[in-house]
Structure formats: C-alpha cells, structure tokens
Length: 419
Image: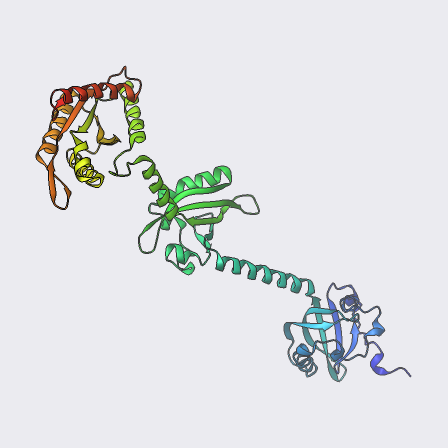
C-alpha cells in the first residue's frame, strides 16, 4: 500500500495548474501538492520528486526558522502570513530567491498551509547589480573634486555630490531642493547657460560664477547636458562644474604680465601701441579728439651713472606715480623703453592736452626724487605733444610727430613742452 505522505492531495482546484505563480500545499512540514509553476521554479522534473519531502530539504538554513514559524501559524488556523523573501535549494542544487505568502486551508479536521510564491532570483541579481552600481557611483561621488549635480525642469537642485562642501561651503543637504539660480551672484547670469543647453543639448567648459556660503564669488566652468523625460520633453540638466578661480586668477595675471611693464606696472610697448591703434580707429570713425604726449626724463643717464641702476629704477617708478596723479581714468600711460614714456589723452583737443602736459612738467620739476637712503635729486622732463589726425593710419604716424616735438623741446633747453 502506497505511503500516505506520497499521495497527492487534490484541493479540487484544477485551475491552480494554470496560474503563473507557484502554489504548494504543506501538511505537517511536508509537501503534499505543487502546481506546474512550482515544479518549474524548484527545477523538479515531475511531481513525485517533491511529494512527501520535508520543506527542510529545500529551505536555506538561515531562513528555515522563519518559514517553519509561518507554516505552523497556518496549520493552527491563524490569519494568513504577509509576503516574505527566502532562499531555497532547487532540485538541481541551485539557490533560488522566492517571495512567498501563505494562508491556512481547512482539510477535514485539520489545517494545512497553502502557499504561493514567485521567483525573485532575477530581481535579487538585479538588485545586487544595482547596489554594486550605486556603491560604485557613491564611491565616485565621494571622491570627486569637481561637483556633479542634477536639476529638474524647474531648475531645482535634485542631486549634488559631497564635493560641493569644499567648493561652495554648503553641505549637499543644504542645497538639494533649492533653485540652482540661488547660488549665482545674479540669477540672470544663469540664463545664457540654459539658453546654450536648450539650443545645443550640452555645453562644455561654459564660464560662470557662483557665490560661496561665506559670500565670496568664485569662477566656475560648467560641462553639462540636457535631460529629457520619456516623452522627449525637457526634464532638467545634469553635469559637472568645477572651481576655476585660481586658474582665472593666473590667466588674468598672465594677461597683465603680457601687457604691463615689469618695472612700473603701466602698459608695455606692445600694449601701448595696440591701444593707440584702437584709439586711432575710433578717431577715423568720427570719434572724439585724441592727443599724444611723448615724455622723457632729462639727463637721466646721470642718475644711473652716479647712483646705480637700482636708484634709476626707483626714480622711474616715482616718475610714473607722479604722472598718474595728474591723469583721468580714460588716459593711458605706457613705457616705450628706458626713460621714455607715452601718454594717450583721449577726448582731449590740443588746448586741453597742452594744459595736462604743462601740469606734468611743473609737478616733475617741483618734486624731489628720493633715490637712495634718503638722498633726493631734482629731475625735469621734456614733453613732445601732438594731436592725432584722421589721416594717421598707424600708431607710428602719431609717435613720429610726437618724437619730433620732443626733440625740439630738448634742443630748446629741456624741461619744456613742445608741439
């Protein structure tokens, strides 16, 4: 006579065989029924491979106590158990992850556990991969020096990496949920960035500025791209921005060094000639009058010969500082070389330029130049003045006339202005 535990119990529900979820019937911790999907999930070739076997043959040891407790509650006729995940060993030895829920089922005078379950192995693997991906992402975000960010379609910051604290002084939690425009010195400054992104879909090293928590303004470079939703609509942006304040400072310093005289800090020869060429172009287009002064310290070689070149350099710096006290913001002073300087007086006709030249001559004459350990010398300057003309095509055209005027001033005894 066949063992009663190996005989299937038919709950008279043949439609269970059509269900896409696994269904089993457990009586006294033993399997008494399994539908086709259940057999497939536990890799059983036929029903007789599992009938009568204890659930303990299948359940992972670490999950066994939890599953047996659920079975006992069902067999006592208690309320159904909510879904839970557990691991089982299939008939081929592979480990599967299942989600099971169970409910008590009355069989004559006793209770059994009717359980349904679904395979979560693929989801578990996917979750593991997602966790690994998320861990890798967080590790990368935590070690970045640049700031990765994401905003939604309304410009609200939805994510920002921890590096933002080093750059802006805010924690990521302080920024998420706030408009990105809040961190610009002027929210309007963000509009060109958004316009470029919406036009091209991305930007690379787009220049901008942001305000730190301490109020300091920093320069940034933004590389970002547009985000779209499933319907292809604009959904925000994500990308990276970096603090380039130091780089900008170095660029400005290099630009300054490229255009400034090393000793005096005023325009060097090249920058001065470029500025004069630009001023002449403006004059030819109908701009205001323009005058040019060529200045030269008289007998300056005596200072170098007597006191040394260090003293001569000190005298040149004092000379430049003295001249700058007589100038307007629009006037440009440059050094051609040695003790020879050029002053470009924009919006100045001959009469007003003559007055400026005379003031400079007098102040140089009346000011002692301290050159070495408290020693002072009196210096004078000769000045050649000319007015720029519409016919002047190059800076050299103007400077040649100014040089001739300077030569006349020297020939006439120095310490004078000649035009």
